[in-house]
Image (cartoon, rainbow, N blue to C red; front, side, top):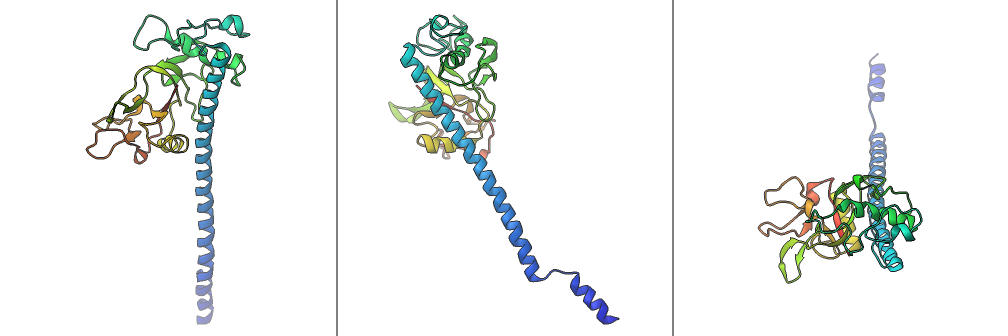
Length: 253
């Protein structure tokens, strides 16, 4: 009887070999999951980079053909089949953001209609000014969206934050110029990787800059997409520790 119980007790446990096999299998599964997550993250980074490059090329191509910027082109309805929106041709897409003299949203929405109907961009866009709610908010169907469903906006604005060329120790909001946003809802780690691979990795230098709306305030406000060394009081690096899922950058033209 004692022998029988002894056999049962031994068969109920796992041998070291069996435990090792289980550990190896779990390790392989975790490795596969992590590798899959890395591939997804890399795909998002490349998607954002490719999209930014393609849109910038489309805008420059449009400008070269029509000698005007999309959205601002005053003869769009005459020279672009199906175009329904004209701009005023002053070289500023949407006009001065600090002036209420004209409806900015008409030209901003017209950017994507002009690009698509002129053959520089795939897709159908309605050119509806109501779809534009601000520099970081534009509805799908009116504006091109990024991989995170955030609308890109090309407009004359001052949404970027950068080092002052006259005094690199000072950082400030940029002056108004035509610029393209990456769109919102971009995780900070994706923005950091896009900046590293496509520019210089510094959110306040180069041609890809952090959007002014996404700065960490001295009090540490809700949008801590970038940060600075202790006591510096300046933006020096993308704040990966924040794990912020809503960041954005600006391409300068």
